[in-house]
Each structure stands twice: as structure tokens, then as C-alpha cells.
Image 1 (cartoon, helix red, strand yellow):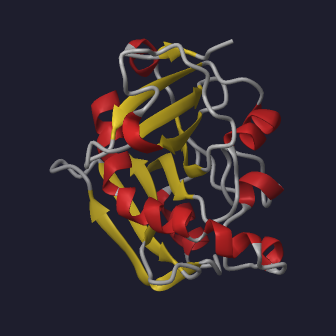
Image 2: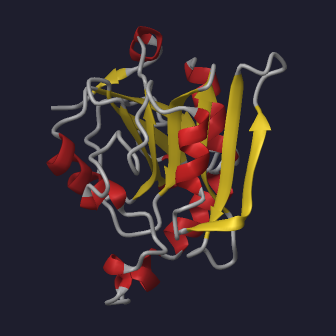
Length: 216
């Protein structure tokens, strides 16, 4: 997947991501929230497997039938919203889209993509408190990041990459005051809320296309 396609996918979910961020203060006050089965916290808990494995679905291995069987079993998915859609005219790529039960109001929260019948991408919004610092503590220091403006050009979207782990996270800075400006060397705020997680094969094109080394 090219960087332009990846960025396009990120922008498609901006409205849903905003809903997730807006709910974080409420979620922090809910003591039962961490154990709620209607929220996907698999990245933190490692259940049922460690990322980038997702509920026993594995990049490059799991089939379309595996995806279908798994999605219908997950409590946090609003099953009435689950649908499949061909991504390309050739029919080689198939997308699986769904809303999550915890959203109020409901909104799209996830997408899985299969290519030639095999899982190649998992995209999930984050509906619980998760900071960039917490992710780095779990995964180690990232290799690089890319910078884009949001569709409204008011915020700055950072896509942060761990290529050896096939993991990307997205965080958003307000008011374009840092990394969407000309100065690309400012430190990144580690308290930023993660708004989405993406598991995908990170190829050499993505690593070399307008990527910035992680500041030391």
C-alpha cells in the first residue's frame, strides 16, 4: 500500500476518531471500563494474541473465512453494521467494515482488508485512554514518522511507524503548531492520545517517502 493510500484511509476515519477522543475523559472516570468486553483493548491486554496479531488473525496468514468467523464472535462489534465491500475493481481486495458497540452515537471504528483472500491490514480506532508514551513503553522507540494535515487543515496528523513489528499508530496535534510547520525537529508530546492503531506490512516505499527519523 502506498503512503497516499494509507493517508487516504486515515482521513476516512477522522470523524470517528474525533468521537473516540471526545469520549476519553468520560471513559477515564468509568472504573469498569478496562474490563468492559464491548471495548477492543487487545493492544494493551495482549488478548487473544500480541499485536500485530489481532484476535488470532495474523497478517499474511489468516484467510477471508477466518476473518468472517472472528468478526462475528467479537462482542465490541455492532453486528448489524458489519459489511464487506470490494476495494478495487479487479476484486483482489476485500474490505470488512464495522461500528463498535461502545460508541455513542455509533460510528465506524474498524476496517480489515484482505488481498487475494489473505489478511493484509487491521485498522482500529482507540476508544480508551492510550498515550504515545504508553505505546513506546510497550513497543520501544519507533523508527520514523510522517506528517500530514487533517482534512480541515486545522490539525496535524502524525503517523508513527514500527516497521519491524508491522505496527503504525496515529496521533493528532492541535492547531498545526508543531510538526506541520516548517520546523520538523521539535520534540513530540508523549502525552498525545493515540487515535488509531494500524497493523500492516510496512514496505520500503513507506519508509523512504517523506519519512522523518524519530527525534532523539
